[in-house]
Structure formats: structure tokens, C-alpha cells
Image 1: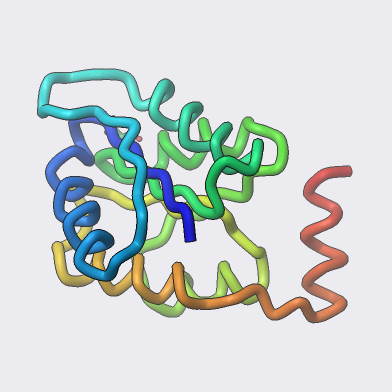
Image 2: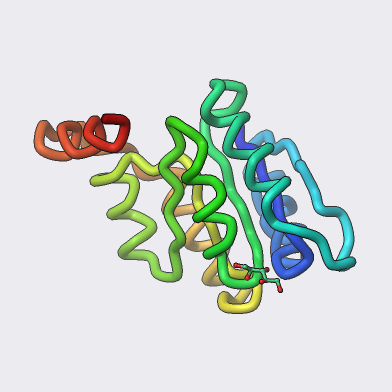
Length: 143
Ligand code: RB5
């Protein structure tokens, strides 16, 4: 699985931990930055990750800012992207099963490290259910 990741200053520290976590699981990850805690806008990393997913260069994207919210709003502006801001394991699973989300957004100022790793693990390893009603609803995102 090809994963791309990005963060602003609010998500930088957690991003570093998620990158290490993914590497420890032998999951290839391309890091679009940011690479330090200096203040920056979340829009650019969000667009870079969202476009990589929308254009098929990556299978999934992960974005981190302070809350995950700015990242999700920006990523969802890119056609074909279904970004979900997730804080709990039930939603991490449900948004794959039901929404076929292809970008996960997380809050570096909200989540503990171990919870964030669990959310990433659950989200990456849950497949879309493919059930007809869910597929119909996902299709309507693009109408
Ligand atoms: C930056 O201070 C903060 O606004 C940003 O990381 C994010 O939480 C926005 O949604």
C-alpha cells in the first residue's frame, strides 16, 4: 500500500511518530512535510496529499494539524477525495466500511500517540464494505 502523509506545525510531532510507526510495519510512506514546528499553513500539505490520492499516485493519505479539521476541509475540496477527521476507533473503522474514506485527518493537539497509532492501523486495514447502499451514497459525493 502506498501512503502519503502531511502536516502543519500543529501536527508535525505526531506525524513524525506516525511515519516511524508506518515504517516499522513496512508500509511505504511519502512525507510531504512540514519538517519542523515553525508555523505554516495547513493548506499546502493538505492539497499535496489530497492530489496524490486523487491522481492515483497513492492509495491513502494521512493529514495532521492541530485538530485535523483544517486539513479535512481543505482535502475535501479536491475532487475524488473523501477525507475523514477521526478521533475514535469506531469512526476509523466505520468511515472505511461505509464512506470508503481515502484520507484520514488527525489532530496532533487532540490525540495521544498510542490512540493515533491505533486509529491509523484500524483505518489502513479496514476495507470498504462495498455494500450496495454504501456504494450508492459514496457515488453521490461526486454528483
Ligand atoms: C494552527 O494553529 C491550527 O489552526 C491548525 O493546526 C489546525 O488545527 C486547523 O484546523
